[in-house]
Image (cartoon, rainbow, N blue to C red; front, side, top):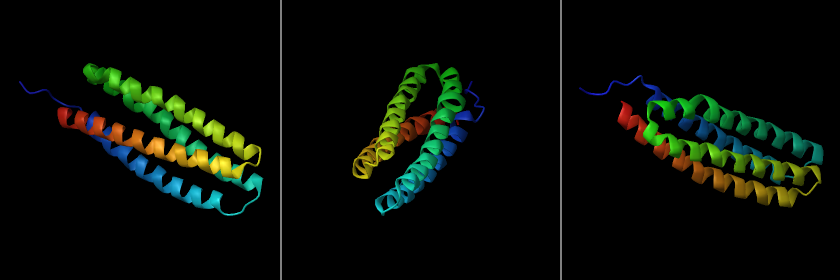
Length: 139
């Protein structure tokens, strides 16, 4: 008998992919805003809004999306937990960027931001591949 799906994995894959595209757009806008001359307080505010969006996204994956998928597909639990574990590294990168901005070190903040965006992009690809695989198994 074929395994029945509750649709969780395909739905989660679509939501996460859409959220990733939204964040990528936000990264581009934030990079442009930080690269132009602006007051330190404005740079901190611009980055603070992005950081809040990323934190919210990571929290959703950490609590709403990946734990239930790990229960539904226990053979993928370790892979999902590795994705969640990587999120702490992103939080540390964001904190370091914020610290640069707080000191007025915009060039260092931009270099850190560019590294963060590259790292986050590679992570997104891994997440989306795994979620696509889960979606195929459960649809």
